[in-house]
Image (cartoon, rainbow, N blue to C red):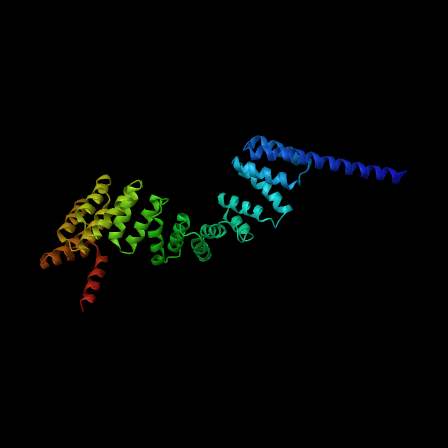
Length: 338
């Protein structure tokens, strides 16, 4: 009798399982119809009913993951794709979806994890390259960004990331060509042009820096004091003294106690042999602080360069009395002249 009961129970389980499978498939098909008609909310309801009968129905899991993604419910979509990955770890479509979801989530370590399982997937090198960049693994980023550019040289984001990657690697000469390419794309952002300007400025290409800064503004970059200061100094070094002084003095008028700005103006103009212009800013610093030894020393150098050697020497001597640390500058100059 016990054996008969066991057999009956087993048969009942099989019947229930078969009914559940049939019900799951029934709702799954209704979900597919709704999905194909782009009625995603209704499709999700049917797919959920299907999965209630059979949580391993791969077709329902895939359909539901898709519709949740279309509805921008990415966390629910991710959970379903992870379930599918457990059931079918070799399914490239599932792996690719997870790679993209984690990349879009900015979870770059997980994006790389799935990208390593996704050879041949669309944008796999791009995702690896950008993810490694964000993870600060710049040598690895370089490898995969190069591959991504080889596949699609018109991908503005990848070209820009390569430029940034070389900046982070402090290989600035390698970064410059990629910036020149990146800023020409229609997708280029004003910030890219501004960064290009900063890089060119630091590489002493002041004409290029001025052009890049202006292009950034023309494409919508919002000018602030930092921007105007960088542009102002680039103009000075490029020989456009009036424009450079105008930009920097506009900032100084907002910050009349900022002696560093005046000192920078005096030093750059002295380097450019604009001694009369330099003296103007030395005088402004001394008006703010009559005991500013550095300003007085700078003024003394200007007078010496203008041919008024005795006057300039006396000013430098007084400056060293006010600030003994300036004596090292005199010794350095004397050694240089030997």
